[in-house]
Length: 191
Figure 1 (spheres, rainbow, N blue to C red):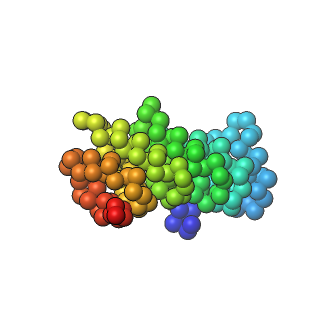
Figure 2: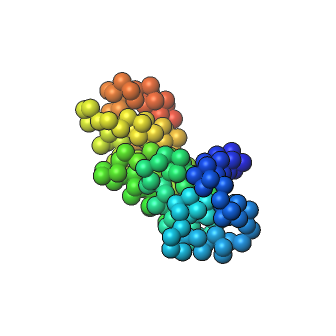
Figure 3: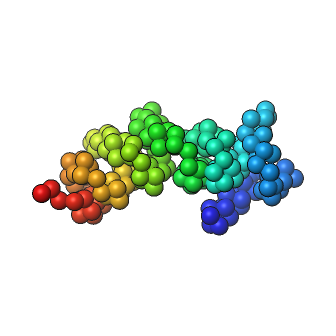
């Protein structure tokens, strides 16, 4: 967590301009004080993110809703921090939420971190969601190659035979072909 914590505190420290409340939230050991930030009116985004991250990595499920909202944020560092905390939260709703975000075509531009989170979680929802998301990315001129590549890599890491067909289709896409070869090599051969 040290690297993630350092990156988060540097970024949020800049956003907060070193406000006293930032220092208090970064140092407090009281989970109730952190949880209160998530529900209190008028809290800045950086304060909510800091509180949610700290609660999430501590396994406090009161952070779940805030972390899911941050996972779907337009700012990639917020998404990355939320994915990190959600992976450590241990909430059974996490995989379902990540799958819903990864497969939402209206928000596909923000699906990279939900896709990576699904791979890390290795939950039952992961393979079907990654297959669905990748199938949609295989259309001609799809602008979301990073999301497609994350799906290919994730499906390879998961090694599920259900991914063989879509990974074979990905071979025809130059930006995905090399990753698809490696992913297919990790999937057990049919007998």
